[in-house]
Length: 451
Ligand code: PLP
Image (cartoon, rainbow, N blue to C red):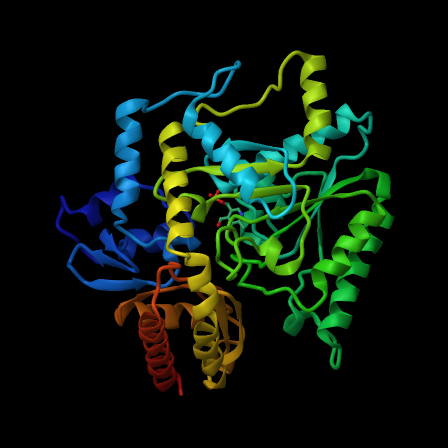
């Protein structure tokens, strides 16, 4: 495709390397230029309107163009645009946000540590876990177990935790000390006749076998998303988290809940941990924390984690970790206002109330000839698609449907052949119908072309 020489599209091709993009394909085809947003909609540079069916990257809870967040950022910019939290300095917004998150946490937590992305939060967790084990005089207890298809970010450590091949290939990852166990996807992983509960028990047994083969004294922590997101929206089978937690308790292994997607209402509860009865020692939060208006993330740690770390920092003389933007005052102020909006407008309740409609519309698509499975919880879901014509080319059908949705004004995301839906929490029932009407028409259109 050729663009005007000075157009945004042409300069984008000329100057920018994009995330999660085939660079050669982008050179040939260019990108979609999004110019503005309003509620659940975004608009491209030709004025075409799209439903943002993924809330950006699972993150814009309050919708686009929220004036209160703009005002909160402006106020804080004018007062103190930047300060840090190194060397015994602090500022109001970071303290207020830490206090708020500790109060909101689903289990007793001791401290919040701020970072700027989900990847940085999980990377920090890997370091905290190591630091703690050294502080406890258990230098061999360092390995962390994650799951195949889990997604925890893209830094060297967090990409290692991620259990997806494209995050490892050609990056020489995962790094040593990170292990992966069974993905809890019942339809894909269960043997014929195996119930969800039986499958959950088998996942826990696989975890226990891995711990025993590695040596329990070498395993420090287990990390998981309450509901897997980027791995294809995989909802845990019945009894999964109970069975997993029993194994972790037995071997004194820390539990890290990656709530980067689930946190702040996505599952219809404030946290995914609340929804599934998870009692984490460490939680990572981001995305809906600020609705991604500004980059901010947080690590919450309980006292079991904090105390040895505090002690080690005293022994060494400092906790030798910190980012220039840790607890950035403008990002923290925006996060606080965003959380106030989520509470005042009862967006968690909205997700809870609209979930039956969202899931009913999603599950209705399961009957479509191109669909094999619909799965979801709260306002997050995926439709897995398949056609024999693409049996050897995973992801091609998903990409075709994604393009068809795009043409009809719906931005979705296909993770391979899993079509994900994760709209802003401010969505209405009529808008849910509008979104799934487009998805259905797109499936029909692609089906007609193939068959
Ligand atoms: N953890 C989860 C569950 C995620 O979904 C993501 C991003 O999608 C991350 C961590 C990484 O966050 P970021 O992209 O902000 O580094």
